Amino acid sequence: MKILVTGASGFIGGRFARFALEQGLEVRVNGRRREAVEHLVKRGAEFIQGDLSDPALVQRLCQGMDMVVHCAGAVGVWGTYEHFHQANVTVTENVVEACLKQDVRRLVHLSSPSVYFDGRSHVGLTEEQVPGKFVDHYGATKYLAEQKVFGASEFGLEVIALRPRFVTGAGDTSIFPRLIAMHRKGRLSIIGNGLNKVDFTSIHNLNDALFSCLLAAGPALGKVYNISNGAPVPLWDVVNYVLRQFELPPVERHLPFGLAYGLATLNEGVCKLLPGRPEPALFRLGMAVMARDFSLDISRARQYLDYEPRVSLWTALDEFCDWWRAQHG
View 1 (cartoon, one colour):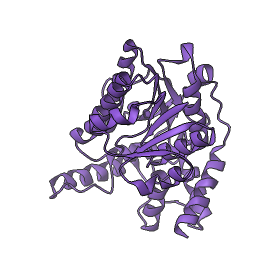
View 2 (cartoon, one colour):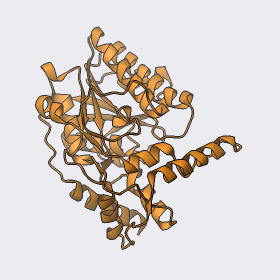
View 3 (cartoon, one colour):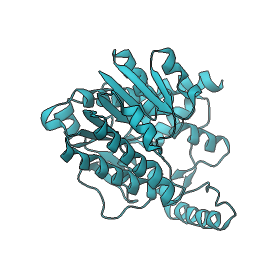
């Protein structure tokens, strides 16, 4: 089987491309920087450099491929709608069009559970519980990209989408590195009562889910799936577990949610007025994420993809900590 993995210079795309190579697949990867995928090239991946905003490049990338795993896209909170639309929607449209023109059989699309988030607590969210209004550009454009993907099924393209929650493990440069940096600067506080439970996903479990998407057939196709470890845990217990691995003091200071939200609102407002609109240190959405319960129902993935989380969160956290020490001492 020949597959293309977009976003292979990132954490999730890079780890899945490596996993696919280990399973004996022929893997083509794309990215803007060769050095970020050199480890994949050494393992046998074919690398084609370029920007997915270029439709001609995407046509070339998809040529001769059986399946595409589309992991590329913009993440984050700060930025214009145009920025997120270009990176998440326009790029996905290019990938869909190339899959159709190059006779790719299947497109597996990496989406996000951010499509659900409305600032409130949610427990056991099912795939249909998308709010009527999105609270940020990222969630809005990821959902719109999903619609572009599923719209291609009527033209014969087999499609599947995944929404994995808080993915971590070796190579995670998003979740815990940011929290560690904030803590070292004395800027990290428990938002609210600190009892909120959330889902995480081991990168190994996500790799299993993505690989199952390549093998799935029949009723498993044409659906979107929640992916997590299936066991919500207190967020701040997890944060303090990681901090202990680096001999850092635990986070004990509490900040009432209303105060935190107000400070974030002020911070965002000031940054919008400053030249260049610099990214704020605090976000309203970030305060809600750190204070609210948020978990997913993964029964659909269990039923149709035979998905069963096999690697615990604590194993994934230990893997991250070992990797981070090796990178930073």
